[in-house]
Each structure stands twice: as structure tokens, then as C-alpha cells.
Length: 504
Image 1 (cartoon, rainbow, N blue to C red):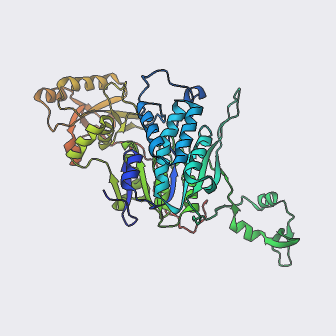
Image 2: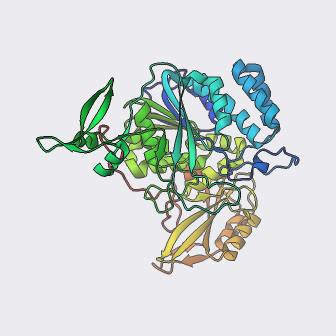
Image 3: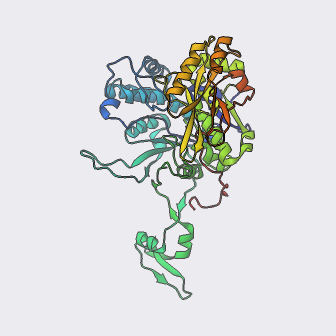
């Protein structure tokens, strides 16, 4: 794959963003970077900053949002000391002396080389926004100072959101995130943003100036111009211009009932990303999100006429973003989107299985419009669930099991059948196999499952079905009730012209 050129389509990369950045993204090819790297701060400080004493740590999963100190972290730390810029190596070394080997230190070690690569791909006139929370923001600011130069720091933006305050015994309720803004060099694009004044009364209260009316009946205030002079500022002009945005952004978090909510645990509001993109990029500029998650940055960039690159290490996210783009912009949006790293034939499917069986399972599950499990263990052989409507009050489930190995015997089918029958809200089961065919004994075990009748429409469906990866790649459709779309509930939006106000 050649380095990305701005004349190429928008691109989604499935994989670890560090090798993707190094191998696929050209130096100084990106105008704006936004990243919200995962870190689970909803744990006690003794866990985040405590030294590990048990080598048998739980596996890091797609939604766990946790980094642990491992032998791989130690190797990466050594690489930083050998090959990173001196200021970065010194900062990481100092952090280790301060923090020791724990989750917080592992997070910083994992972030350092990625931030170095992001500095490389950012244009000299580009801007980067690093989204974090107060648990790690002060450490990340020092790391950003080492990489981008402290003199290029522009703002610590406080994203303040509302919520139900709990009565805490020893601290205040947390109600904000931190977004660190750096520009790579002088001359970076910046367009100040405004928000509407709620009323003339609010404007006068904030300005703390006396309301006056001229001979034509126009309302105005006298504003200090400096050096003892004052100028008239008409209220209708001020109301039309709006209130200049400062570094405290009051934008509510998404709740589950929000129209744009996709059920993704760390989803950010479109308003937040649209403000960033409008402020620090122009139409046609390239926007990069190396932890693109559920695709809010990608969606906002598409909506505002920017080019974009998204990278994520989970197929769940890539699949979600593709569905989100189609749901909000129509299927034709994919005509100008390249997806890299997703299997498209048997050869690439086998490569994915060899590289990561868990990623292979999640990809296969998504091919039958089911939602993958978040964890690899304790799932009783079930790798995903496809939901469907039985009636206005009841949701049915199809349990999906994926087997990438060469041998799939009748015992696998019997296990799936037992799990379906013992799950009170499960009705059907699907077995996805790497092999094109199964043995006669296995097929007989599938046939023994019989049929289930949908109580609302009377349709009969096989209780157990088997489908091969090759058949899924060829577009085979299973005999199943219509699926509830796993993630997407957002409606198609009407694109806003670039010159319209940020807020309606």
C-alpha cells in the first residue's frame, strides 16, 4: 500500500494505529488531528497507579479501555529510550522514576511513539487536539510539550457537561474532560467560532453595559475602544454575530435517548467534533482520527466537506463506522471510501484468523448482522448475538458461534443447541465455519434442531444453521428473522452548508 495522497478516497484502516501511521500515512499529509485514546479512569487511583503484583492479568479487550504493564510495554519503553527524540525519551524516563510500572505508566509508554508519529504526519500548518480526562491530562501535556514544543501549546480546552450530581464523601463530582490543543508551527489555520446569545438580556448581563437607544430606535451599548475612546455596538449586530467561544465548552454528553446515540460507551457529541473541525480546518482539508471508535470524527468531517482518515484496532468499530456512514449519508458515500485490513476473500480471512482469532470471530459475527461479544472468555462458546423483533414488547435472539479451526464435529453443534435451549430469550443458533463443508454427522446434528415458528408472522426458521466463511464472502443470506441493526439508530441528516452557524 502506498502512502496516502490527498487525491485518494477517504480511508478506514483496521489495525494498530502505530504500524498504520508508520507504513501508510505520509509525512506532513494531514491538516487536523483529533484523538481520544482509550483509558479507563473510572477506577480507583490505587488500581491505576499501583504496581502490578500478579502476572496473570486479565486480557485487554476492545471495550476494556485499560492499558497494563506487560513485557511488550517494557520492550516499547526500551525502543523509546533508543530511538525517540531526546526530549521524549527523557520525559518517559522521568515518568517511570515517578510512577513506577503500572497502568498509568503503561498508557504513557504506549502513547509516546504514537504521538511522535502524529507529529510527523501533521503538516507544518496543522493542529492537533488530544482529548483526555483529568486523571492523565497533566502527564500528557508534559509529553506533548516534549514532542510539539511547549511554545506551540495553544489551549487547554475544558469540555463541561451536565449530569446528576452524587453526594461524594471526599471529593467533588467530576463534570469535565480536557482537550489539549497544539499547533505544529506558526501559520496554522484557525477560525474563531461563535454561539448564539440566548437573549439580549444575556448579552447585556455579560457585557455589563448600559442599554441605549439612538434616534432611529436602534439599541446599542458603548464599548471601550482603548485610550479613552468608546464606540457604539448595536445589539442587532452583536446578536447576529454571536458570542465568541472561549476555552470552556458547555456541550452535554450524549444520553441513550439522544437521536445520534449509537450505544457506544465512549461516543462523543457531533457538536464537539464539528466545533473542532470548523475551528482548525477548511473544506477539503484532511482530518485524521487514529482512535476513531464509533466514527464521530469521521461523520463530522464527512458532514463538513473535509477529507478524512480513520484508524481503529477493532473490527467492531470499523463495521460500526461503515454502517454509520451509510445510515447518515446514504450508501453512495462508500463510493469514495477505502477500507484497509478487512477480509475480502478466503486468503485474507485466513490471514486474519492466524493473526488474531478474536478479531476473526468479531468480523465473522458482524457478517451475519450480529453484535460481537466484548470478552473472549466465559461466553459458553457464543461469539455474538443477533437480535430481532418478536412483538412490541419482546426481542428475540440468534446466538452465533464461530469456529475457525479445521475440524468441526457434531459435539460443537450439540453445545450450540444446548446453549440456545437453555437461554430463555434465545430461539435460534448459527454456526460459522472456516471449512466449506461439514461432516454428515455434523449436518445430522444440525437437522435434529428442527424449526421454530415466529409467533407474530407464522414464519418457520431452522433452529440451527451452518454457513461457511466463503458463503458469507459470496453474500449468502441466512434464513433468519430481520435483524435489529446492531449499533445504528441515528437518522439520515441533512447536510448543513459550511457558512451556517455552528449551533441551530
